[in-house]
Amino acid sequence: MTSVDVQNATVRNVHLDFDLSIGFDDGSVVAFSQLDIGDTRFDEDNQFEGLRALTSLLTTRCTMSELAADGTLTLRFDDGSAVTAAPREEVESWEYTAPDGATVLCLPGGIIETLDAPETSAAPASPTGSPAIGSTVVRISSGEHGGIQFSDGTLLATNVDLESAYLVLRESVVRAGRGIELSSGHVL
Image (cartoon, rainbow, N blue to C red; front, top):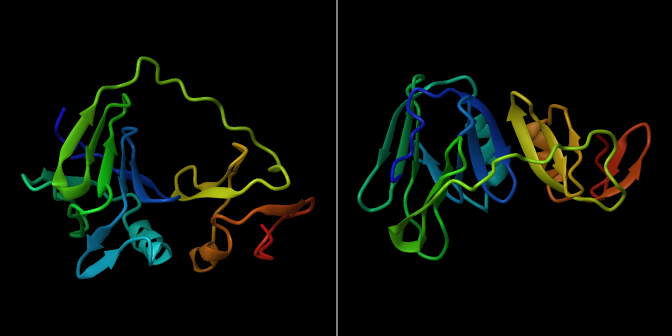
């Protein structure tokens, strides 16, 4: 597999952990360390703005997925928008994970690598309830099944105000009760 097969798939959710990711209704995911939407570049320096920009793609359908010879990935959507990820020199630029777990990724310099699907694809269930004191927010998701994932595996199904997402991601739980207080002082 050397293609990114998301054409005709609908954006179901977007995530921010250490990369920005787009999740599709077929179960595939494309993660980006750096991407361009129009004239704006999003990377580790402005990833919260990138999450807000990707949120506008929720429920759009991917009309084109193109992988260029140099490793540049372009996704076009039915609302007219496009996401482009060019190769980076020092880190992976993007990673596509198919519904079966097979992976295509753009290594530094535009080298494309493929990995076969794992033998089993059963994921462990995510615990619900309150996260453990000291656990850290590792992912913020918007869209279908949006929420906050903690390092202890707890998933809190909630909508995150993207204006305050920087007060949530990578923050630790200091108190849990009526709300969940994070080390930033933000209460969920």
